[in-house]
Image (cartoon, rainbow, N blue to C red; front, side, top):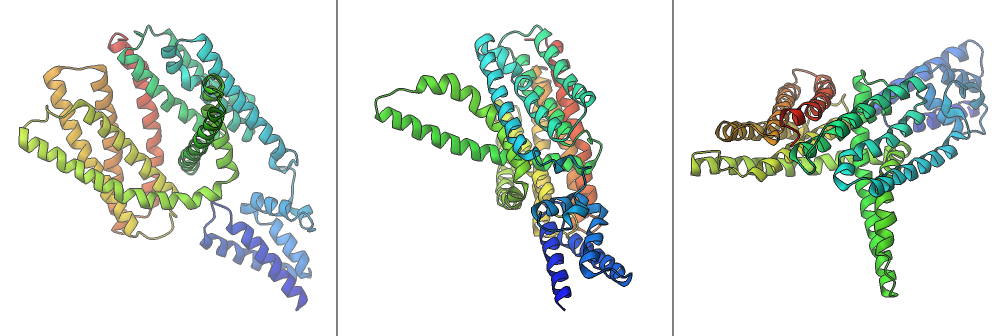
Length: 452
């Protein structure tokens, strides 16, 4: 009886640890525990003691070897660490985690120094155009190091940055011109996907790994906001305290804090997401459930406003240009919210009210997008093509295809005609389209419109 109680305690600890792993659902844990118990029973029948059977059974759980190794590391006093903790995984090196903080700190400082050098040696328009090339390589370097990527893979990751640097600095942009701004906005989109390739360790063809990167992006944004709020509050208190003492430290913030803090926060936020993923995973569903209904109300109100403006003027030419720009930003926000919601959802659960709300959100966004396209095409027919109009038109077409596909699959899912897998796969397989469009904009739009 004592042996059985000890075995149950060991299994309970194993289950608790596995249940805390962010990618394993409770149903999967139940199934895995069933396999574990079957293995223990078979081994006990073969003559092993309960403790020995447990050790061997855990060692045979192939699909969770990495998790078991982590569990063994956290319970180092137990004998079964020797059976499970194998040297094949690089994370088993005891110096890895302490060394990781040093790597993160060095990369954060390096990114800050790169921006500081850019501020000293480059004009503001040139630096703004090259900012993603200056900063994002440090984030790529962190993930390449974290995933133990080879030198060959590192060179492949560097190639898009070299190509972007050549395009952005060889093209004879008119300083402050429209095409320069367009290129500066779209280059980070392309290079962020390169960060994604580094994040997934080169497994970009895997839909599951792409979803991991989407999840990381959402969590990274949350951490960036938290760091910005905390850093802003700290900076304000520090400046206020020194100001009360009659000491002006504005020069220090301008010369050192502004170049280092934002870019350093990008690296630190990535590290925090890697270290504390399970905490943010609890925030993601809350954020999506709060902002989805609010966004639906906003989109329906905008749709009604569009219709009212058309009825009153009988023309879409009177739609303000700035309104169209803001609408594009809202549609991009809807896409981000949709991706974040998909990344936070358990694909094995049946559709619920929130899934219906997601369908309403996508349908409303698609309707607004159609109206925007009508307004853009009418303005182009009346006033001709410009770099801004072509870029916005292409973006809206790309968004519309994505939203229509998402709406169709979402409706099928809530009606029970398909599982959640196709909904998720559609978004993951569509991600490269955004990268391709952004690359096309950077390369083709400036020369088409004379770099002005």
